[in-house]
Figure 1: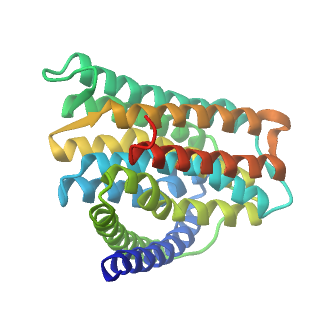
Figure 2: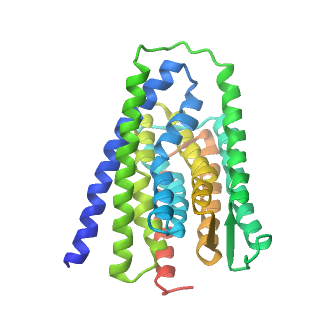
Length: 330
């Protein structure tokens, strides 16, 4: 029992540390965006999304560099993307009277996010077919392949930069940029420490239960590292900032797929990804993406009934992936 309580306690403490770090990060990011006069969409899709995605980036860096568990980090990122698409919009919708979308979110951010999923699929396919040693069961990812999604994210940033260049802010606040950047650095350190603790807890739980580390990446790490995204989006929805709430989700997922996973490959030099583990979850991610787009495009809002359906779909995903990981189903 003691062997079980220790990692659970560590996971809870790490979750609190990540949550506190996310509070600091959200406050500093908002003040810096207003200080620099950034549009709301750019604030949500770039500034807030990249900052709140730091836990996912930390998870793959720590898993790969310190623990040699690249698949653990990938599992956490893919499952975190699913959590972001299904649970966070649901919580945001339930916490406010109405969570509204815009055509720009659907036609620009959501469509580019679909492109990011396809680009990641392409990287996996190239690793299986063009890299020596790749098979129809495993893909070997190399540094040159990692540059493809990174370049794609560069295009995403360029498109938002073009929008920002034409925007004239009518709201500005007086802040100390140096102080706010300092608080943001403190927040990122707190999040990094929390993620290291949650990774250690997940690896320990895997040893205790004799289950694959990939499963704990899909559950414990994914949910914990998604806390900053959830905190930012729910707060934005409660403040009637639906655009920031939804663009944060899409921007975070785009960053996670196009930057976080390739960074893990760059640090590892080469990394092997099992199709038996990755492709089913990537397939469900693609399905969750379509569900998200269809329901947010319908009347350009997400109702409470649809939000409950999103949560139910996420629960089904957890049940399915758990039963498959422990060998109950194939």
